[in-house]
Length: 275
Image (tube, rainbow, N blue to C red; front, side, top):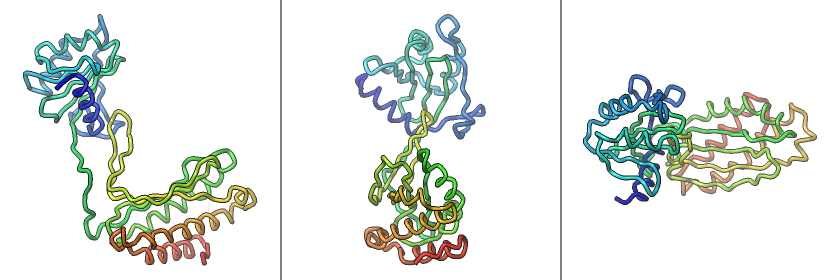
């Protein structure tokens, strides 16, 4: 494999890797164990060599430096090569079976990871409740209060609408655009959605339906806090008509029941009487 292809392959695999804690167990980002190895004269060559040999237990490993300098090298000499370049470049190490990685940062620390393989699609299991998310995270000065007003009701709705409505959709995300320069995006159904989570990899969500809606910004300025919630919930409810239109494409999603449940929650929990 030439250097350019190897370099690209490593970073593709890096995006699907999970990182390890101090016990070499898979962990969340806040628990990743970062090992200090130093730079240049302070580079801990013996420590790095021992760690690599214990972690990979292979005679040859892929060493990834740049798109023009990446290759299969002898494990016995790999720490010397890392020490030459680490103060200038981020460096990766990966085994030939593409199951493990190490990533060295230019500040002189490294982490160990396991490469995960994620299918491009999967079928939704019967009886699994729909995971609903309402989002109003991006705001401007004039709409900051709107986000605060809807935050807790949105959480309540998400919990109450966690039901099995049939079909192939596992996630439904509806965004409320609160930045006037933004535009609403139409309904999309995607078999897999990748969400970047930094150098720790990506989060993968399957069978996702998502879209966003735009409020009337001038009208929002005139509404009291008490009226804002009813206006927003009514706007969202009306937008869910798209789910009725798309129900066959979504494997006969029970959009009518979803809308009935949405309306009932709004009426019973928030006193918002949606017509």
